[in-house]
Image (cartoon, rainbow, N blue to C red; front, side, top):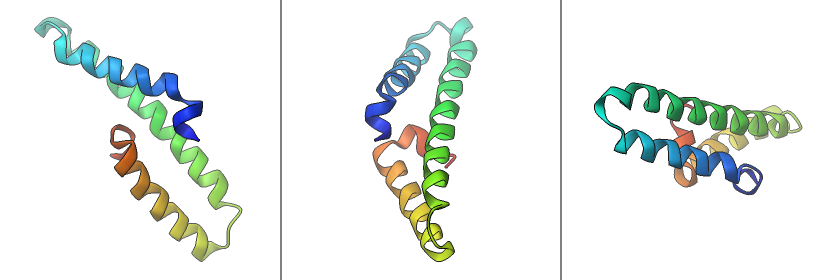
Length: 84
């Protein structure tokens, strides 16, 4: 669901990383900051989605769901999984 609803954010994040990787030395810090801002936005969106659903579950099930969700994000959306 995240991938379809936030396809633009995912594309922008990848483009920001490419811009950082190809930036001249004097622009790298700025470009990396832009990339990190997009990663943070994606991570926050994923966390909000995860927690909103987890709140509908029983405590034990919610914890299992969060762990599974985090594992899947790290696998399928690794850019956003480092801080989740």
